Image 1 (cartoon, rainbow, N blue to C red):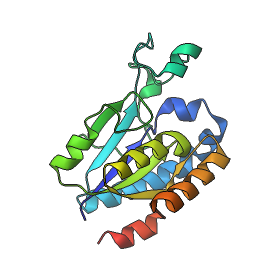
Image 2 (cartoon, rainbow, N blue to C red; image 1 turned 180 degrees about the vertical axis):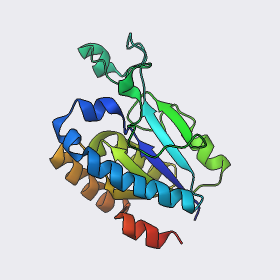
Image 3 (cartoon, one colour; image 1 turned 90 degrees about the vertical axis):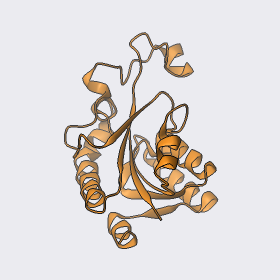
Amino acid sequence: MKYALVIIDMLNDFFDRNPRLKKLKKALCKNSNELIRFARQKKVPVIWIRQEFKSDLSDAFLIMRKKKESITIKGTKGCKVLEELNRNKNDKIIIKKRYSAFFKTSLNTYLRNRKIDTLILLGINTHACVRTTAIDAYQNDYEIIIAKDCVNSWDKDHHKITLEYLKGAMGIEIFSNNQIKRKIR
């Protein structure tokens, strides 16, 4: 197996604008940094997925345009990765415009060119961007591990339901950081 660590939407706006995520931020960052350090030690590529839109929302998804919802706007602090996270200039950064990190991005090409077959997903929101990325990865025949210590959502119930769904319906592995470390030797 050849792995990649895919970090989804760990962005300022999502944490600053939501009380539940704001409360979970410290633990999510700590757990994510632990996994990021481990990935780098094992020479596993680290890929940052960032949602980012133009200020006029012309590239945003339909509901955002309808509601005139400005979030993760290009050039603002809100679309930047949390400063608490361990980033490296050699990491890959992919900008997305929809929930899935695969939708009209270079992610699949990047992974295929490196012969990566297994993705470790972490980030937010479990019920939206993590879920759709996992489903698209599944449909592209990748093995998938969700780092359960490093994912969450502003919606507690849908976070839990999504993990159960992905595990049950698709056989996606939901592992703790320690389980992931034991799996990757």
